[in-house]
Amino acid sequence: MTVAHIIQKFKTHGTVANLPGCRRKRRIDDKLRRRIVGTVSKEPRTTSKDIKGELLDQGTSVSDRTIRRCLSQSGLHGRRTRRTPLLKGNHKKARLEFAKMHVDKPQSFWENVLWTDETKLELFGKAHQLYVRRLKNEAYNQKNTLPTVKHGGGSVLFWCSFAASGKGGFEVVQGQMKSQDYQGILNRNVLPSVRKLGLSRRSWVFQQNNDPKHTAKNTQEWLREKRWTILKWPSMSPDLNPIEHLWKELKHAIWRRHPSNLRQLEQFAHEEWAKIPVDRCRRLIDKFRNRLIAVIASKGYATKY
View 1 (cartoon, rainbow, N blue to C red):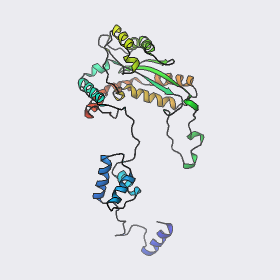
View 2 (tube, rainbow, N blue to C red):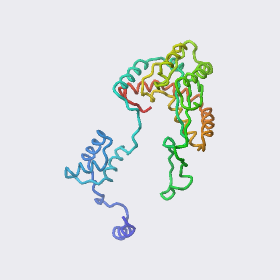
View 3 (tube, one colour):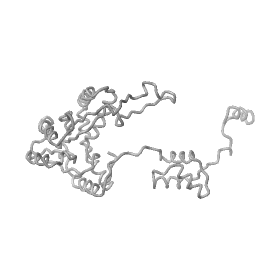
View 4 (cartoon, rainbow, N blue to C red):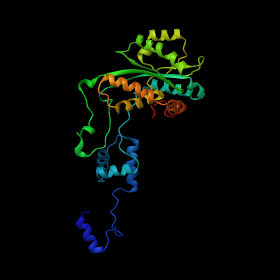
């Protein structure tokens, strides 16, 4: 309604409030709303244009905007799809078996697990995504941009470990890591971490994923010689490893500091790793059973973790 319309309404009726019987007729009744919501609930990738076309074929004309508003009012907002590992039938089966086998383990068992993993931190690139709130014409203000270089600027690979009692070893991997390099990292870090974190010498458990370097024949032989108790881990299961949450928090903390070269990237990584509180480690392990319950509930499929 324009200003002129408002003035004219006041002159005519002595008010600018909605008059009885003048409310705009609803374009979507409850029956049509249920149809629209049902369509999207059944197939979340359905667009408002798809729904508009389907309704038009059936003799009902509704705009894209009205359909989107209807969905938003019903709690169905547009969101980016979450990326999850491509799980095949054997992966789901293994994940479900693992969850069922371990869901009733006592908390003391998980408190004696040394969790380990590697991750790559890119100096610049797709992995480095930040969001800003800005005005339409401020896209290229320096504070709203992210510097990039050709070929990504390089990356650094890190290995780390942690347990319920705190953080263990944290090491930069020099060059491309091969199975022998991996064994060297374990040799330098695992037992010192077990002692530092106060894990039971008799009942502590070593966790690793199924990366080819971890499952290589020479690595498996090396581990057998060590006689460590190893947690048999299901493939394609990053959502089961609580260390992924530490990696995510570490990456965001580093990127907020805007490292300009690989040396700074390494430096910031060590500094931010040192800042992670013991309580954070404890909370992740205290809630680990919830991950197993979620896998069972999803019948082995990817979970929110």
